[in-house]
Image (tube, rainbow, N blue to C red; front, top):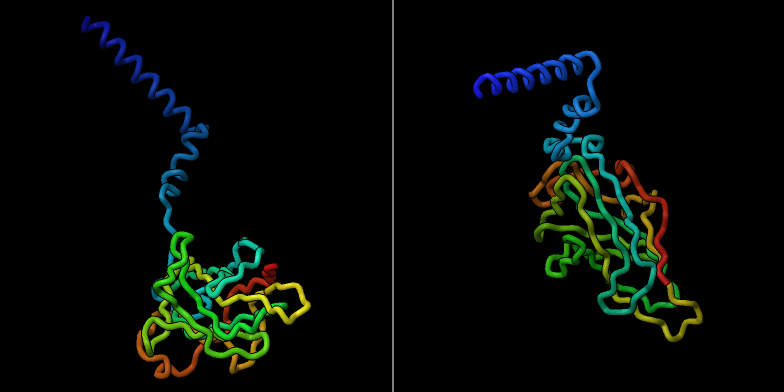
Length: 223
């Protein structure tokens, strides 16, 4: 019995040695991919927590696919967007262009964070501070005096407004939303790399839309 077990053990060892030797000269796909799979297993995105320039933050805007059906309500969802970055940043102002037709004038807009595809109505992050023709400038904040501190990664938001039909208009109701590519100084974005929790007025200069790495060119039209 002992001798038979010895022969079985030797056979297994010889087989393992042959496979190992063969893979040294011509690795099998499993062996080839083992190291790669090990590295990619649960691979987490790398963020630059010490980002101190626009290039290091790499701020880009994503407009996800969303409903193009216009809803009517005092709290109607009109636009979704995602801010993606490789590092943290502080956001004070953001401007959108809105083209309403056949609707009553929209005098106020609010931006809420999107948490797991649900709108967090209890924690608005921005309100419209200035509206002129088709421009809407939003003021972001984390507190009364400080701007909005945005962590690295993807942060999604929803624009909400009062959308009501204008009974005196002959136009078909619709609303078009888009990110402008160029803005005058009074309407430009205002943001800074890194986390700045002090009062925004103490920070002095800020960056504009020109330093945003990626802007979506397409518009969203809801009818």
